[in-house]
Length: 188
Image (tube, rainbow, N blue to C red):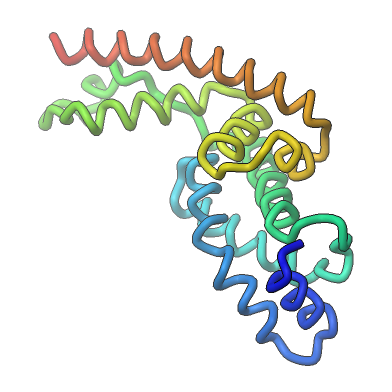
């Protein structure tokens, strides 16, 4: 655990004042929110889950093991909350880009290539099972090692390596399919 994190955790566990935990929130809130937004792709849900992450952390800070990094623990809480929200709400159902015109969303304005690419990436990411998407995001976007991702996900580094390899392959296939669909749509 980083020294500053350890000091903040000790202060938060003591419960004498909220300043140490406030420092934890200020330090990690934006990163956790960005990660959750990538994972759930719904800004309101991501903000709710970010808040829930820190509420859960505040209530359970006393259970944090000294051998577990604070950031890994916070990402684990966030990941678990996101997976539960996905199962509970089934909110992440994507409509193929080719169908946007039929709904009226894409009929009036042709999106530029950057917007299409972002949509294609999001679409491809959301075809992945949540645990694989989480491993991929934690490793690629958040910069965690396989061992750190394993700690966050509650599994082994080897399982994380396999999930990431499978996620990359699935992502590549979904991305290629979505990209073909968006190019076909843009031509018509």
